[in-house]
Image (tube, rainbow, N blue to C red):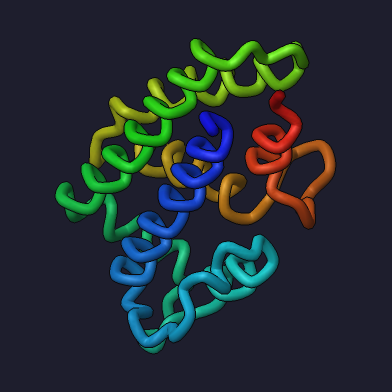
Length: 157
């Protein structure tokens, strides 16, 4: 039950962020936001230009730098996800040390992101943290076709 709640919270986190990303990139016309849970569709859509001719992911970064409200919204979504991660780590006996360590590192990274300010370097770091979560990017393998966080939650027992 606890792991199902974490899975659900992770999906809600992503959907909430996607809603905000669509607003920030001036892309509210996108019809089915659930499709953007697919890593390759998210990549395809947000790497391309919006109707004003700017790259959508760059538009998000620029908007976060100029709009404190939406930055705080995404940080709030991250906090809620982190609360669920911490609760799960404390309640569930995670027998797989790799899963435990992964969730621990993710939780620590989220705490670091909570202090993000609207300065250029902070926003660049913040967006560099978010991009892999939504696209499957990592420096070792490039783009993955499966969601690493979702996979790790699935391995937890």
